Amino acid sequence: MRAVIQRVTRCRVTVGGDVSGEIGPGILVLLGVSKTDAESAADYLVEKIVGLRIFEDAEGKMNLSLQDVSGAVLVVSQFTLYGDVRRGRRPSFDAAARPEEAKRLYQYFVEKVRAAGLRCETGQFQAMMEVELVNSGPVTILLDSEKVF
Image 1: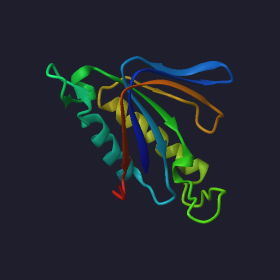
Image 2: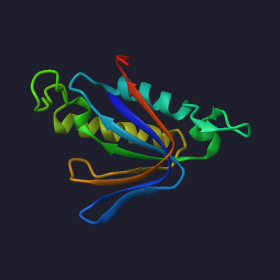
Image 3: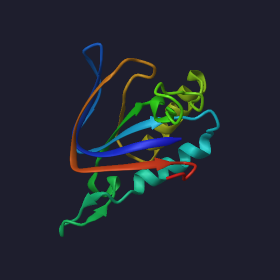
């Protein structure tokens, strides 16, 4: 499972012009699911994200987590995180999970974030979405449950 984490002052996702999810200060999570992922991958990423100290303390140092700042989370499914362009110019998505399994693990991930006591908004799975965000910092972190980076 892969995630692109962006610290935001605000962000929202729309589907067909309608707002699907919107938050103020917090993080945007672009989430990709591979065909080898299981709940343990989601558990690992949720634990990492919830405790990630990327918010500034009184001294301006990144020492605070989402829970510390009462931040919110917007999770958007993004299978293209498993796009492989090592050969040719057209991405191969062979490593991405099939839609049914990806949706199940995406929903599992969202429920785990909510169970951690955080407000969690979402995009719409398998929809063409527009994501608007104001990246604070900018701060962008890449996470992979297989720890390849």
